[in-house]
Amino acid sequence: MQVFLGIILFIMGIYFGSFFTLATYRLPKKENITHKHSYCPNCNHKLGMLDLVPVFSFLFLGGKCRYCKHPIGIRYFLFEILTGIVFVLFGLSLKIEINTVCVENMIYIILVILYFTSLFILAGIDKEKNQIQKSVLYYQVLVSILYIIYSCTFQNGNVYKYGIYLTVMIFFILIDTIKFKKNLQENKILLILLFILNMLIITGEYITIATLLCTILMIGFENIIKYSKRRKSPKVINNKKTKPMIFYFSIANIIMLTGNNFIVNYMIK
Image 1 (cartoon, rainbow, N blue to C red):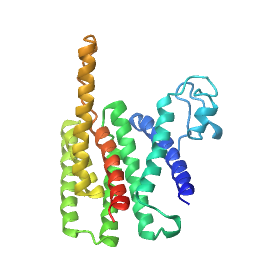
Image 2: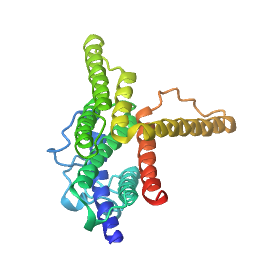
Image 3: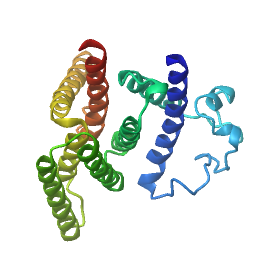
Image 4: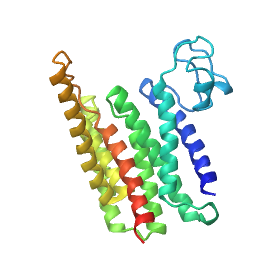
């Protein structure tokens, strides 16, 4: 039964991963992500059904477009597999059994999938474009509000705590809107704070703190590697570009949330 569930979760994950790569590519270009037909970015040829099967189409086509033979970036293939693995690990971390899934669990799983959707897309865009996609961040705000409703309905969530979070959230959105209209540019720090607040609402205080610590370790480890490369090869260009913080936060949050579920469901009795 667990193997069957793992297969279902993996298939779901790779299809979501395919959608995430599409959204990461199109959203910064302000292209429609739901109604516009998929196409090859090199020759603009519309892709057929057999071209759009996640993971397998890449393998069957030899990593090239069927029509123009232009190489397809292997990062898309790897990202789809990674998303599938994340879905499997998260499902296993919850110790899900198909025959015992109840409405409450299903709602939670759906909300987490919606939250993961925002994490993957925000992380992808921030990594590739070094920008925070505000439309996806506001989608995440909506997921946070839905999670508050779920928590207060099924989990006896603290209404006063969530009331404070909502007040702060509205304050951040208002300030960002005012500043954007005044300066015609987004306040990245404010958007990061809004992202952290969403993370705080959905994954809780403990996991958020663990995520922040994990992010610091990831950035520190990356800086050590870059410093070592510069020492070995002084010709290496020192890239001063702002670090994609949302990318690091998202990866760390997925790791911490999944790891916490494993600890709670398998190690603590």
